[in-house]
Length: 246
Image (tube, rainbow, N blue to C red):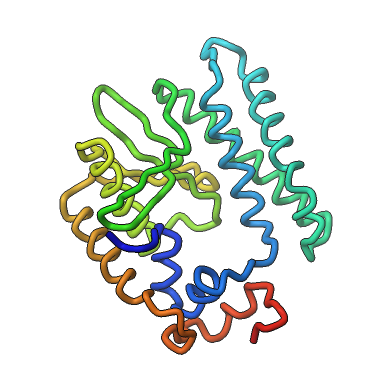
């Protein structure tokens, strides 16, 4: 069993830039505040909380919309200290807030139309065999089918290599935990109101297992020289360097 756990995020970080991996996961530097991270956290928490509420599908839309937006407002305000650290004007912050509300209302409309039961949310899965963990945003059961769903709040709606890695690892983790493969792994691009689905497969699991093995082998060292920069120096700008940082 590997000595430490990787995650979809840590593996993708290493694949993009080994030095960024070193700074974040070995040197453990903190990254600066980001409006994108703040928005993502608030939206994800809001969807998870609302999904666990007793949702009356016959209630008028204004009531359910207001309930959802009230939850979002509370989750956004919890991050006020981080928001105040941003080097952004009030107008830009307000635009992100309004856009996030639109994402959530669009999600609610689509969620209401699907007729699914309440999903399990924020499911933490671990694999001791592969030394990897992940948190699945939502797990739905639809007529016996298992659907793993991840929400994205970014402006793009492309299935990137990062997303492929994430879905593969979720598939591996789910089967190891529950002894069966999920039927569908999906991404919901909230800004675009678009859900992209993929059939889970043995090929995905093999891909994830190999990624875990390779990343563990390449991140055994604590020597900074073993983690060359591949991003043109952007990684150094992302973190808050301590007094000994370069």
